[in-house]
Image (cartoon, rainbow, N blue to C red; front, side):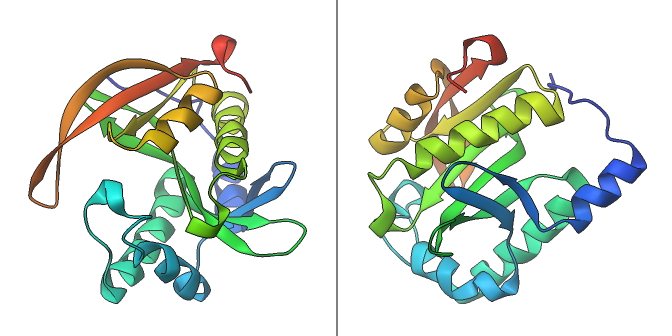
Amino acid sequence: MTVLPRRFTPAETKKLFEQSVMLESENLTFRKLTENDFDDLAEMLHDPEVMAAWEHTFTDEQIHNWIENQTLRYRDQIVGFFAAIQKNTGEFIGQMSLLWNDIGELRALEIAYMLKRGYWGMGYATEGATALARYAFTQIGVKKVYTSIRPENVRSVKVAERIGMKMEGSFIKQYNGKDMEHIIYSCERELANV
């Protein structure tokens, strides 16, 4: 089953693809990732604590591929991982996303968030996830958003719960040659804290 969004006109699609800043929240700006973000991404994707739920860190080649894959997502799907930039400093603090993803048997719009370790516990993940959910509901037109979280990733579970998501089940995802359990969280527009 697929949760379908509203259809963007060709003119809207072109405009969205060409703009670099996708949305803003009170303290954050979300813009498309570029190769200029390599060092900031490497700080996160080389950090074993940040990458604990993935059970591996990324190589430099994997980071370059990551950026390239986001560019393809922007072109083909409008969404992807975006650089989260702190407004008052211009600092790259992490990456957050809306992604069309397979979540168990469902193809749906998923919110994901990953911050540099120095920005954990400051409310940025909750603020960003709230802004992304609002964008998904109001601009993309979905009635429900999802996230899939490893059970041991307690910080991410708390973020999902803060924005009004409820646990809906779990599934096993094959990643990097391993079976990894993920908990499915979701919220409908009417029940979200956005």
